[in-house]
Image 1 (tube, one colour):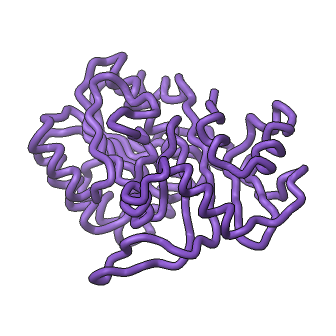
Image 2: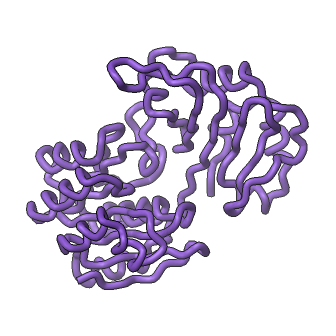
Length: 291
């Protein structure tokens, strides 16, 4: 079950009321809330974006600024730190993506001004989703790559696998949570259950975080979300050479699609992952051998 209340509290009152008026089944299917300046609010239900029923007015710039102020606890420093990455993490593990005019310092984004849109992504926990993966891990530890198209549930599956390895098998897990989507640490505490033997490093690029975690935490498993850069692949190679098992996700609908991309072809050639869990649009997954 998703606790929507921490997320709903920061939304404009008329949007909050419209969301509360959604029938129970539709609320369960709610994935995202989009607020774009000058347009009516929309929601994503089961992967489809549609206008939010009952929210008749258009979103204003003042509403977006008020929303972000509330989400950051009215702390200008906290807001600036997170807005430089384009998002704010909310209590409960929900995430607020933000667009606007970037303020640059030294070629890096310092913060965002003149906010134009926000995207509230609702975090979901599905305990038991990774049961079959855990059974496979009990039969023999291995490194696993989770594949799937956008919105197929890769992060949710990885989170539950980390939790179960940590709590049910007693494994030490180091989690490189660069974008705060896996554990959603807020004021030092993970808002999403990743297990009591899991150490989380948030907001740090995956390649650097992986090195720091390997040196400091002595993990049995290193978990990262979304391998996207050559530096990430190099970090996976280094971790595997240290004897650490790997858990990661990648955007691809199939192994054939994955192997057709140079970055992932390099990853597969290294042989650091022995199995893949391939998710479909229906969020079901199948296990395939990689080596």
